[in-house]
Length: 73
Image: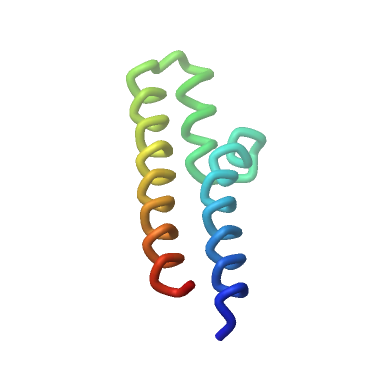
């Protein structure tokens, strides 16, 4: 397949992973709902853990997409 296609597909995948947390805050489900519930109940330890998980997923996603871009393009 075309490297431009894969580059765009990986970029959109990376963006979708990052946006999923924001969408959950407005009621679309996912990890954002857990974050919203923890924030509403003032469970700061859970808020910290959820934010750490979101950050870790974003970093791992970035590493994987960078590695795949380097191999494909």
